Amino acid sequence: MTTELTIDDAAQVRLWHRVGQFLFREARLLDEWRLLEWYEEMLTDDIRYSVPATDVRGGTADALGLIDDDAARLRQRIEQLLNGEVWCENPRSRTNRMISNVEILTDRGTHLDVAANVVVYRFGHGRSDAYVGKYRFELVVEGESFRVRRRVVVLDHETLYEHGKLSIIL
Image 1 (cartoon, rainbow, N blue to C red):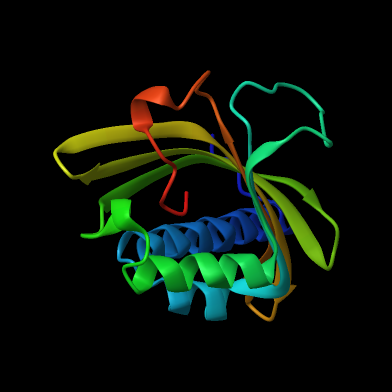
Image 2: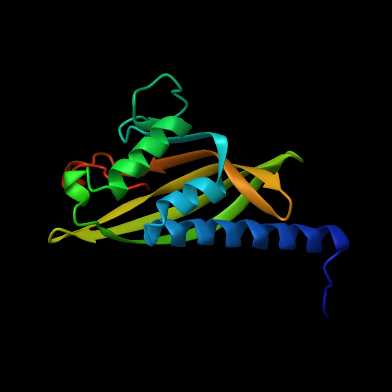
């Protein structure tokens, strides 16, 4: 016995596929250090990129975070990385991102709330690090594609002591 997808199910599968392809392209651009292209083509003008502190769990919106960038600060971070101003990224680290468990949490019509698991491997300066965590995105629908309005990286680590400075865009 075979079961065919209904029209609504097929549309959901197509949407999930488009979201996955978008996230995979984002990962590739970041891994290839095509940061300006990523910033200009994949993010909204009111982007918010944050990485909460690793020792904070639960809903603590007022807790101090590792990163909390608006569009201007993120652009400055990118320019510093690309211009060699960040000493621990000169020469640049090599990164490789593994994204899995992509899930559309809510379809709000104009934007999607999306979750995914991530491992970012970083190699350079005689070290290798693995950042393990979860992505939370707010993706604004733009034609057949999306733009990121909110990008939160919740790391599963209790501390980043072994990893040293968080100098790459997760």
